[in-house]
Image (tube, rainbow, N blue to C red; front, side, top):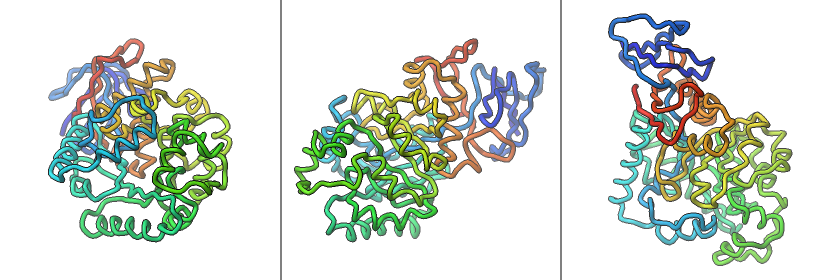
Length: 392
């Protein structure tokens, strides 16, 4: 049995507790949370830390299989150029890919991450997901703009689903990559997999995406035209989010990822589906690729379900939810730390259907315990020096 305390406990499911105590059994399951009223008395074998205790982080959007691409790309060149760089440099020796996947997995453990929503185009990352240290939901991502290839693309995705089920059992879904990369025919066939499923899709990550749907031109349209004949490009909707939601409406939950160029008009389109939409933000990747952050204040003011992700090491310097929180806090200092931590813990756990175990400090859960130190406790603000340490 362990008893752990700090200046404050952030249960997330309730108000912060000053000098509270978390009691863990030998399996790190919470057996008690003690509200001392701020008056901590001397207790035998009590571990006391300066900082705040929070649940383990949830990384709601990652591409761990791209870890070998860290530091290889130019920053702030826009989405079309980023995709081009990934396509041209993605191939590598399998031993290198596996080693970097393992390194990223270990990095996330050190950074207090306990659950991950991970995008997969290959089976390269499956074996690491049998580890008990992090719970993964694998999103098998498919794409294609040629209608005649839709059936074959679906079949290739099903092969990966079967491989998970038979060899590496863990939660998984078959999902579309992005509205600009999935034809209506492919979306229609794919939609049969969405019922009672968690679906993740890249959403409005680039201004060029909006331009492509609005006017049928622009940098993204020009880039895709190099590979596919888009001369008959005529989407059912001139808004990419509306196009996606037309096919996603029967999903159990929808993770809209990035949302860098989501505006008020898009929230109106999403309104009928808000109860099952999680708006996943990856701010450091947004800065890396487009040099722009989403209108996070807009999403917050509408009380939307916001979760946090890191994207991949191809578009980020680290896989740390704390670093994502730092970036948001530095640009939006009015957002309270408790809310930011909720985005990086409980909301992510709910988005991935892991909230029965993760996301909040509650009796009976095994959520992981993180210590955040080197922060401004008086004003309850993190800063560039703040660090996370996994305690349990």
